[in-house]
Structures are given as structure tokens and as C-alpha cells.
Amino acid sequence: MYYIGLMSGTSMDAIDAALVKFDSKANLKLYREYPIDNSLRHQVRLVNEKSDLGHIADLDHELGHLFAKAVNDLLIDAGVNSYEVSAIGSHGQTVLHKPDTTHKTSIQIADPNIICAETGITTVADFRRMDMAHGGQGAPLASAFHQYQFQQENSSIVILNIGGIANITLLSKDNSKVIGFDTGPGNGLLDDWIQKNKDEEYDKDSAWAKTGKVNNDLLEQLLDDNYFSLTAPKSTGREYFNLSWLNENLSKRNLDLAPEDIQATLLQLSVITICNAIKEVASSYSEVLLCGGGAYNPAFLEAIQDLLPNIKVATTSDYGLTPDCIEAVTFAWLAKQRIENKPANLPDVTGANKTVLLGGVYTAS
Image (cartoon, rainbow, N blue to C red; front, side, top):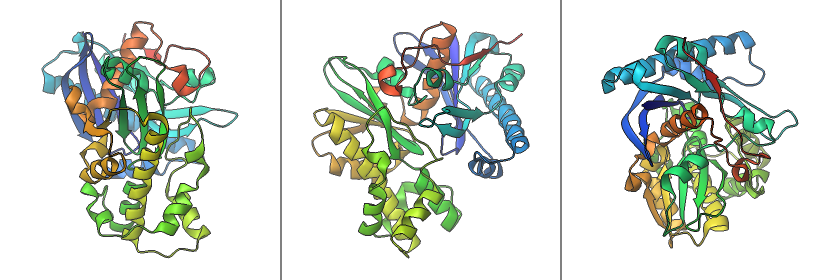
């Protein structure tokens, strides 16, 4: 039987949909990216904790239909019937992630009731909050799948996911405890800044950033943020690292910079915070495997390799799964764990006080 994973991520450029079978490892049958309309994307990006609840409900409904359509289109593209799928794992679209407050929560929209109703397939969603209910941060959740898929007997490797936020998973060859956490910004600030200044969704191959010059005063100010010195477990999101955060830092030093210089500085911020984290906790590891959208950006690969000269930098393609499909496959695997009543969080990664089942199950009638 197949499982389907759905993920739109902090970049929200598309719905990533993966059709997977699981043996000893994940075997990808088909991966597709189904575009999200620019207007809808921008509406979701503007959602915050003060947004009108009626508007959020409308977006939840609209995304539910869009995610369901992605599943049905994926099945048509793959030539697979819905009864051949055990379950869908839908991450949904995060609109709020508050892992460090007294009232921890993480809210994703894309109504799983609609997904279940329109596909006829049992759907698992709301993966983060049970971990939070047991004291965790609800993230990163991908580390458990990384261990399942990429653990090596003869080498210690780092899985580096560069999405809107960057996160790492450390897999030691002695199979000791897994370490994983969000390092800070990945592509998110870069996407937001180019969208604001050039009305483009992302900076392809960092072409615009390359026209600018890194401003060391701004970089020093950004690197001074307390998040980067926190010890794991830790997670973050666009609720924290966003244009308001950037503007606050610009105002602290009264900086008036060319937009392309800010873009170049933001790229350097992502690279340095990623590499600093790896140097701190995985300096003796032999390889870094990139996944996520940033894995296709040569500027990221080159800059990371320059700062980690003694570690091989490659992508997950070397281990059988392309970088863009990893998160969607992760949620297919998380659905499988839930349907089989198996815990799927790693307390050492999330900070939870125990392993727990993740996700609510919406059963097709």
C-alpha cells in the first residue's frame, strides 16, 4: 500500500506531494509540485496572530480544497487508485508557531476534513501539538525520518534542510542520540526581501544577492540575535525571522543600505548561522547532505563548502531521494507511523518528555 505526503512549507511556492511505498526505506513512486496561486500565497503570508478568524477560516477551507486537488491529481498522474493508498499525511500550512511561550502552540491550516472527504482517503494532520502537549517544541519533526532513511553504519552525516527556515539533523555512525534543531533563516528572509523590492517570488541562484555587497555592520547586528546562541532543543519560524525583525535591526544601527546589499547580507546570515551550528555540534562529521529548495542554489552550496572545507557537501540525491521531495516524503512516513500506532517524535530533538503518537486521524467513511 502507498502513503501520500503533503507539504507546502514556509516558502509556500507550491504544494509538494509525494506518493511513497515503505519497505526498509522509503521508495518514491511519484513526486509532483502543484503551484499555489500568488494571491492566495500572499494572503497566507500576511496571516498573523491578530488576523481576523473569519479570514483564517476561509483560507483553511480554500487550502483544504487545494490540498485535496493535489492528491487527486497526483493519483491520476501516477495511475494509482485511491483504494491503494493507506493514508495521507498532510502537514498543512503553518500560520502560527509559538514553541517557547507559556501557552505553546503550532497552528496549520488546510482542513483535513475536506482532504479526507474529497479524496476518500484517511488523512492524518496536526502533527506538532501532541509533542508540544508533552513539553516539546513540535519541531523539527523531520529528524526522525532522517534517521530512518539516512542513518549510516560507517559515517557520521548531517542532513541540512534549507527551506524558509534552515534545520539540521545529526546522524552519528555509532547510532547514538539524534540531534536536530532549526539553525535560523534559510530562504525565507531572502524571498520576502526580493518580493518586497522587486516583486519576484525568489532570488534564483542568488543572482540579485551577487550584485550586492555584504554589509558587516548589519551582519554583526543580525548575528547578535539571541536565537543563535540558544542551545537545542530549539525551533523557530517566520513568526520570528521576518521583515519586521529585519527592519528593527536596520533601525538599531540607523542603516540606509542599497536593497541588493541587504540581500547579499541576508544570504551571508543564512550561510554563517548554518555553518556555525554545524561547526559547533558536528565538526568531526564527514558529510553534509542538503535538501529543500536551497539545495538547488549553487551560491548556498559553494558558500557552505567554503566555510566547511573539511566536510564533504552534497545533496540527498546521493542517497536515493531528491532534495525537493524530502519534506513531503517525511509526512508520508509520519502518516504511516500514526496509522501503525508508532511514536514518531524524538524527545532529544523536540524537548518532549516522552515519545508520543503524532497527528489526528480523519477516517474516510
